[in-house]
Structures are given as C-alpha cells and as structure tokens.
Length: 254
Image: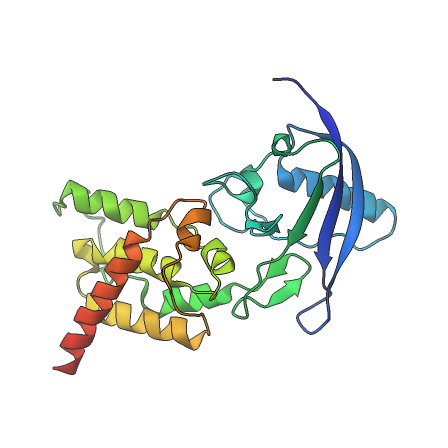
C-alpha cells in the first residue's frame, strides 16, 4: 500500500476539568502518515505540545486493539469516526485527505461528565454492572465446558450481546443519551444462558433501576445507537430487555 504523508488541521475540545468551561483549540499537524492510527496521530501532536512546554491533550486509551472501549471520542460528529463497526484506535489516517479539518470532542452526556479534555467519567456503566451484571456460581473446581448443554441459537445470541465493550458510543449518539443498548446487551448476554437464570428477574429490575438513577435518557427507537456501535450490537437486544423487564415486573408484583 502506498505510504502517503498528509497535513491536517485539528479542532480539539480542551477542558481543564468537569467544573471548568471548555473550548475548541486549533492545532496544525504535519507529515502524518496515512498508515498511522488515529491515536498515534494524537500521540504525535502531544509530543510536539510537550516539546513546546504545553499541556498535552488528555484522552483515554488502553489496549489499542479495539477490545477495551476506552478510546471513546467524537470525530467530525460521529462516535469513533467515519468507519462503520470500528473503534477510534482502529481508525487509520488513510480515512482522511491532505488538508482535511478534523473536529474532535468528548462524549456529550450528563451521565458521562468530562474529566479533562477528551476524557469522560463512564463509571455510571460500572455501577449498572454492579447492580446485576453477574451470575452466582458455586466455588470449587472448574466445570467442564460441555457440562451444561446450551442451544446453539441461544449461545450465538448471548455471544453477540457479550461483544459489547461498554465504550458509550450508543449513549453519545442517542438524542436522549439513553444507555438502553448497553444495558440490553448486558442483560441479554446473561438472560440467554442457564447460568444466568438464578438472578434473571432481579438482574433486569436492578440494572434498569440503576440506569435510571444514573440519569440516562429513555429510548425512542431511532436506531442511532446500533448505527455507531463499534461491535454492531443489535437493537433486537432492547426488545429483549423490555420483554425481560415486563416479565420480571409481573412476577415481582405477585
């Protein structure tokens, strides 16, 4: 593949902390290889800023392999950038052309307050998981993988839901800042498996209650969440969540 160098203009949101007012600042970057990842491009800019004695841009990253979900940012108005089913760290600069301007922002949701610059606090997701995203198992020796037969269709659907990396793109894209796709994926993952049966009813009630407590908005089925999800989690999971919630509520009333 041809190795090309491009020059870009970056408009990046800078914000000292959650209590400070933020603003966009403009940075020219030169001689960026089209084979760089998006985060490597920001690394180059940060090296320049550090050498100039300036504060580098704060952003989340960890695995840089599209697995952890930490690299969450708005790029030209789309979570994780222009490539479908893709995380920011797996976005490469060949997606852009010489002379392009790229606008980079943090997630915009009250439930994800800004920590600094492009970093937001997504611990609300952790608290939703703590509310019910687990299974109770007996301790002891590991059970053989095939000890509990599971229908392939259910196993496949559970595995697809478990692919959610909790990045928050669904919340960022939703006009209501809804976390329904995230919660639906986590509920579906466990509700479809026999190991998740003991907490099946309490799980969905507790996780939805915590979601509401965290201040996420309601779902109005626009499908924006599914469109930007880097793991292409289906909104069919939201229908399953609603069904699980209604059934659990009926049983709780008895």
